[in-house]
Image 1 (cartoon, rainbow, N blue to C red):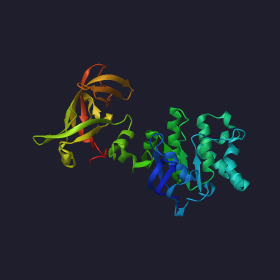
Image 2 (image 1 turned 180 degrees about the vertical axis):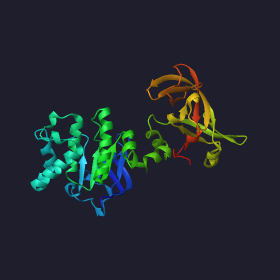
Image 3 (image 1 turned 60 degrees about the horizontal axis):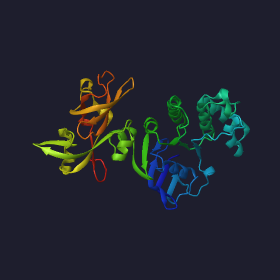
Image 4 (image 1 turned 120 degrees about the vertical axis):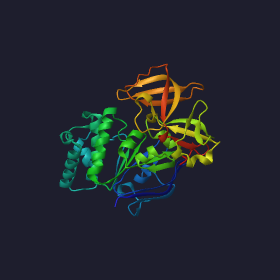
Length: 368
């Protein structure tokens, strides 16, 4: 079993709490991603599991084994770092074999594991080269290969793709997912890139200031964010937020944002009734703001007029930067590429209210 359990884990650096009371159960063979902005505690959480940082409070288990005081080399984990940390004077083969030689693994077994890992990663032809002769993507594969030959129960990856260019990152993401499926081992992955998290993880743990905000599947985090922070962090471009008040007029509930107001669909009203007359935060994603001319079928549209400041032509879509007409409240919409909008024009947009979000203004928690 290669499950991992964090039980009320806290890490302090002097007076600074880097990770606060973290409790997560990671199933055997799961691909869990820690995601969040710099300084949120995601790498520290990984390093405590690896044994590279001491735990201030709490317990960490690998399978049924408490590993708080177990040395890193005895935890049956392998780690891939942001810097590939390859030995420059060694060949690719020797870099991959080095850890096994230290453990006095028989030479024949080392040869089998290195060649098998090289075959999985497609680097068999690079085994005689040295790191300086490799591209960034090839070095990244060697670093992953060095972890694979260990045949660990748990793979730990700390932002391993951040040194690659955009095209290579997309390719490497797919390779790591295939690797996870092929090896059938538990993967725990750290990134600040929410796109990486969404495309790779079976579950995602979102951290902020050392505190776990929400842990769920990528789709649930996108559709049902637990608070304003998660809603704004997951999704690109980020969700639009407006300060608003919920009001009722003649039995119709409205989200009143001062510059505009939009009706709440009847089937969505019930959980919001206790908040009538109160300040809330109204959220809607750019992809749920449409050009009415090209709006998809089945949406619940509400018209909002705004002025276009900037257009980003992406080929498959147009990202439009808007300002409301009175107080110039900014928001983004993602339009069909056939749209005829231009910079400076005032445009009627269609907010899909079936995909709206309402958050408590004080607690910032989602109202469901």
